[in-house]
Image (tube, rainbow over all chains, first blue to last red; front, side, top):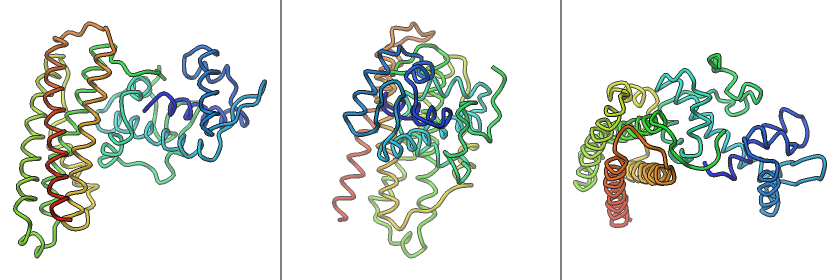
Length: 140
Length: 164
């Protein structure tokens, strides 16, 4: 998953958590980068029509941005589910976070052929727990 | 969440190689399932090139799996046995439509594997981490497998073009 898709996913989840625009600080915390890096990428994504940014409020995804974020979140859910169901990784959240940049969506699609996902995926993703609400995260 | 592609630890490297093994097992298992899934009439009249392609794909995946498994073993990790992945493929397998569907799925298999190895090679190259196994040995193995996947894409494309 490329960096832009990781940002879009973070904006999508932050919007769900905050029930409004995604604040720069929230995105910086989620992505573990500086607010300046967030502002730079948000500007690029705005230029590409994937989100709108309002000063002092934050970023809101456009319809196209929501679609891309949805796909990115689905890829992430596949990685988490694959790690826990097939490789039986207990710390699947930490590992999914570390691996998501290296796993492409086409690879995730293949992995998806051997796992079970709920029909509502990725809506069942819990942004606060940072995993599917049907998966039991181990205690970090 | 971690931005940027790089493989920073032995653990991450082992995990990605394990995923590579599973991908190869999926390819091998799906190739075997495809032949069995074709309707009897189509199976009997199957293009010998397609049959040979699927056989070779299964053999090649098994060989790739062994090479990856040897690296995983050196990293003191384990791989998921083929039988387990085969059972998972079996449980969720939906046959593609006819020989062309089979070829298309095979093309996706080869392209996906190529992309996976390409990304993995890039992620290892952009890391300056020291691994418990020789970095060059890992990269050489992965580059050789990537090359075979590229040839695989060409082989499938050639047959698809000929049948079109």
